[in-house]
Image (cartoon, rainbow, N blue to C red; front, top):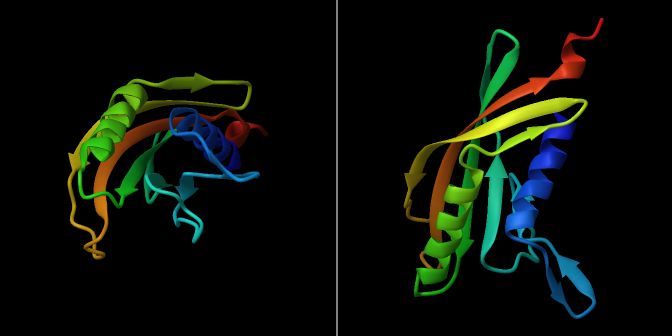
Length: 134
């Protein structure tokens, strides 16, 4: 699971890279919870549930994309970018392999009225070669 999270983090950061503030590199991609230093727009992703189908594990990959601008153009563009780039994305190495498929796209209202949020839900079909080693 750590390999999967590390690979996902790298993938998402390749699409929405860290930002440099002064001499500090600040991430704009977070797992489960954002940082108090988060700079908008930023992404929070999670793998909230999974089930097993024979040799593979099938995860929901949930992504919440947040922005604090009144104009949602940048938010929509970033959402579209992830929606396009992640669909049918495949990864394989010596330890793991996975493919991502689109599931759902939602415009939920955030509890904080100053924020705009978009939710993307993908299906991630995952195979960990190490799980079946004897």
